[in-house]
Image (tube, rainbow, N blue to C red):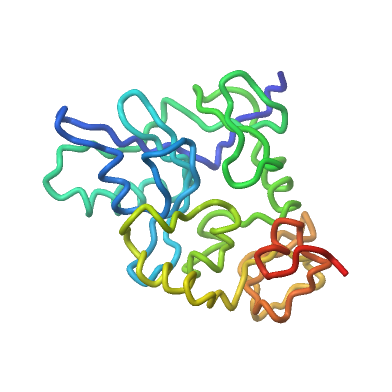
Length: 246
């Protein structure tokens, strides 16, 4: 097995019950966009009240509660935000640096397919070890047109990040922060813009969210009618209502 699996730009936030009467999954269920009481890991986000992206993460089940696979840079901010909603509930929310996120394109023992897109590969949680795989992961993810994190999503409306197509939202789970606007957009099919990964040379600087000169790529936030279906990955053609390239 290759040793280059450690995603050093990712961190884990642990949510655990301090009292046997507390239900960690029920607590998180009322806050995030996806159903955390079903099969895990799942992809989810914590939104603003307006339905805009604040934090996106993968949710893992743990014997003591739940683990959030999130951006290391924003892990402390996520802890602080979740703690605001905890109120008097006896739930411990903290960063856990004893574990790390690992990734490989090849299936590994104990690994799970990325819930967003099978082509993204496999992830697992283990002790921090091995060489960093962040550059390889970023290049692979962007090659598939998948945005991730605050640097690429900013405060964009959750459905405009392709959350439906990347399995990051449930419309049957009940209420969560930002649910009203998110559900309304879905019912009215009012997703007018999309995050797309484009060649840097073709990027619209006015609509650019992130740029990666070393990869020759950029992430743009573009109106749907301006998108060229032939330039989109297959999974995203469905998102803009074009299943096949003419």
